[in-house]
Length: 294
Image (cartoon, rainbow, N blue to C red; front, side, top):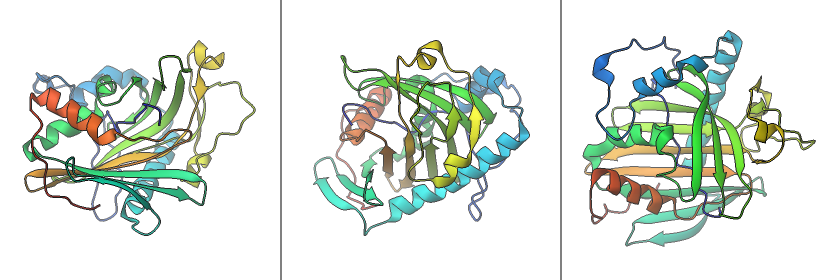
């Protein structure tokens, strides 16, 4: 997608989930604890919450509806990743141990799936935290990416704004989206993001709709955006669904990335993520794990 890549994930806050019903738990604000202070090159979920708790949503109905939407979004993500019949096989690189698939949802909306393995399973928790830290978004994406939290529903669920440029001369773009992280087990995490019906003051007669998750269009809210958005200096885009399934398997971490963003397609997401992780952990590139098809 012209040098723009979503890292999903992303970034943000810790989510607890019951495996049987996948209910996104509504939690109280975490107590401030000096032990949560990170000495790493990323912020912990507790630190991120503390930095953004002034953005806490107080509308109980909006919190409930946001939680329902993201529980539906994680089901959509799993279904699109598990689908083995609709995708066209695009590429398998045995050296980088990467598989790349593409399909058109309902014949027109592009959905991409990329699967790869990272060798160092002992870094599982650190990887999750780094992918959630919005301050590191530019490290995990090719190009100029700026991500910030726009609203906090609870420690498990947020709204983000992402700005990016496809090229040095291209017009800057942006989108708003809800984002959540589901801790399925100690060895499996799902990260998901989807754009909803968010009125940000962008002056356009065009109707922006989620083409993957229809109920996302029923989630309505307003956000106070910046002047450059309200003056149409940026181009508005829409993230239909984006996310990761991250699972520890033996000595490897199996990572599957799914993406459907209007007007964008990724090509080198695996390479971007692996190189960034190796840089943070001061690793050289190791021989990757045995291929595991998603």
